[in-house]
Length: 145
Image (cartoon, rainbow, N blue to C red):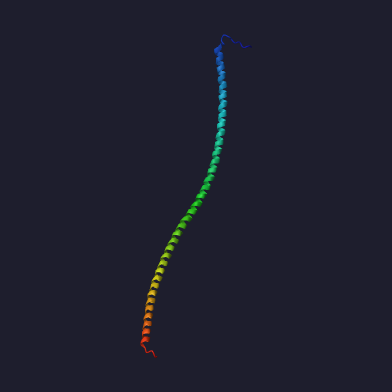
């Protein structure tokens, strides 16, 4: 059986319609392939991106753990600093108390030395008067004795 095609019924419009129909299928195939390739590329990028995010999250967790440890160490040292400030305040109060005591002792000894000077001056005056009295008595007494 041979295909009988009536050339009268086949015209240029039919050929253009069939070519357009075939071109549509070819273009749909090309678009489908391009779309699938793009989807594969996007999925690979997404997987790589998710992997990078997982790595970054691990790095961030590690950094946060290190920072938390450093902060805890600093908090401990700050606690010691507060204790040192308290101890320094106590030492300064102790120094002030010692200073006050030394000033009182110095004042007391100063007063005692002033009393000693007064007493020595009085004794010196009495000795001088006693010497004068002895000299007068010796001058008044007969020389022959």
